[in-house]
Image 1 (spheres, helix red, strand yellow):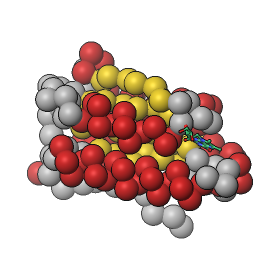
Image 2 (cartoon, rainbow, N blue to C red):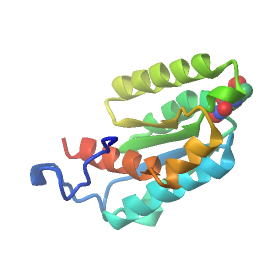
Image 3 (cartoon, helix red, strand yellow):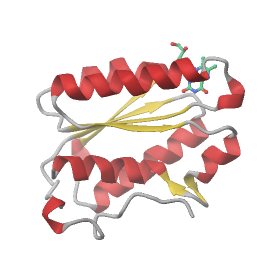
Amino acid sequence: MATSLKSLSEHSSKNILDISSKKFGIIVSEWNEEVTEALYSGAYETLKQHGAKSENIIRKNVPGSFELTLASQWLAQLEEIDAVICLGCVIQGETKHFDFICDAVAHGITNVGLKYNKPVIFGVLTPDTQQQALDRAGGKHGNKGDEAAITAIKMLGF
Ligand code: DLZ
């Protein structure tokens, strides 16, 4: 059975944080929009369920996952933003750029998080097929957007 992220209630209570005053940036890639919109819904609702205020959740779109890095920098450099969640979907069968895009985003947003000393969460699906992506965007394998939001909250409570 695949492992999944522990929910906040299963997580150590010392890491649970009042996020009502925390400000989140969520960046959504428009490629594979059906998938990324579902990831966004999951992330947004999870933040709200854990106490984030809707006015403190800032959404920005980018054309594709490759652009997540620069956009995450634009948000992370803002003093008022506490954490950034990057959502995208790169489907292996559809692009020879798969490895380039995935590597670039993974390294890029890692560097942004280190540079600005803030959580910048990798919520990018990298499946072989669209069905596998849908299965992880509100389907039978849950929603990785929820998990990205929970990861952001856990990191803020570190
Ligand atoms: C070009 C491209 C391709 C072929 N496939 C995807 C994909 O599956 N998922 C995704 O998020 N973006 C894709 N892109 C677009 C790139 O991320 C990027 O937007 C362009 O290369 C322009 O920089």
